[in-house]
Length: 153
Image (cartoon, rainbow, N blue to C red; front, side):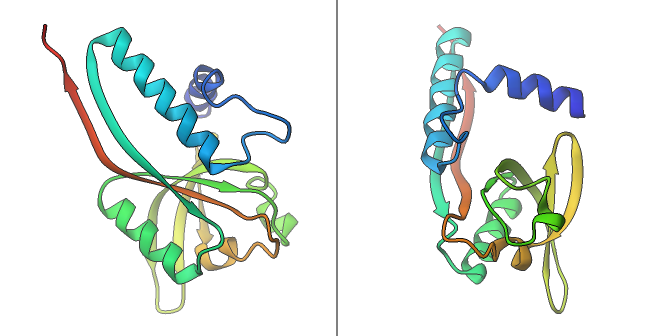
């Protein structure tokens, strides 16, 4: 829900602390989430492991589509950062914003993604979203090797 999203985002603020211009670099997300996971491991005697990799907006649409499909099919949401976009009206809620891609659908002509933000889902054309029209594009995070196990002492 919107309330749960806001609550979680407040909890993550110390880890994904905005700098001048917000959290505008993929590496800042990775650093913050890694620090959060390490602290959770210490507090709860758990052993969470997660490998994260940047996928910049400089890649082609086709490469982005393949990576997103792979992530969703592996059961991972895709944290996506969009900075600017030429179609301000269409993407106003997504400009300079982090959101999650939680699903996709392919048709004969397009790949549609389901983007979740503020507890709501939106269906967007990945091709149109990816073509921001700007050099500073953002990108997304790829997850792998996610493991969760309790450490018994």
